[in-house]
Picture 1 (cartoon, one colour):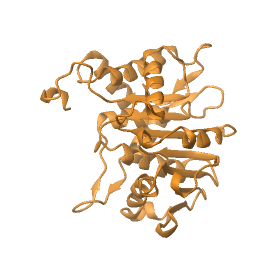
Picture 2 (spheres, one colour; picture 1 turned 90 degrees about the vertical axis):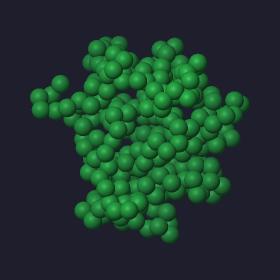
Picture 3 (tube, rainbow, N blue to C red; picture 1 turned 120 degrees about the vertical axis):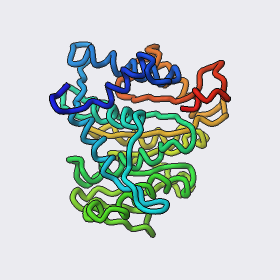
Length: 287
């Protein structure tokens, strides 16, 4: 650990794996993956490393943001799981070029647990404060209304903080945010509005993928990023209940990544759910 810096990512992982923090099996596997990767970082078989400063930068940025919704403004405070996910996505780096390791992210968690807010944090951070200029960022869903949710989280962060607002221009009627220092733009796109072609996006927030009938949106966005040195396609979902779906296919794939049955070093996975046999009425399982 770097002297003077707190490692909230690794601290949370250790707390979960040791049993000090209650967790479902799949989130525990995500924590185990982080700890396992720390032990083998910067090796021939694993050319990645964990940059604590990079992890802390995005966490600290998040906790300077203002939540304007509700009665009176309040400063965003990440719960440990959110700090773990944000810090992991931005902290892990490629040894070859120091760019972010994770180009894709899949996070599943129940409703009202801040997953869209989290994607909004990432969008503001990448658009305004990365080194990339003139980049394209998108918030995406099957319906326009849904695609604007993460976009609106970004707009609310910006509008609620006069200091942050100096770095961005929000054009609500165009569903567009422009970062004035980087000229990066954030736009809300949807399948119903004609999202069929690929885009070179440095960041895409794909909301509620359990509502997607197929993988066409994901493939269009993912294929468009191949030439980029760094990108993040952040998929969020509550999983839904359709077994014959793209979401179920992606979920099964991601579980195998966590279990170590499939290797996908560019894919970040965290799934928060009850384990089979858990009692949904037991208050200890509500945390």
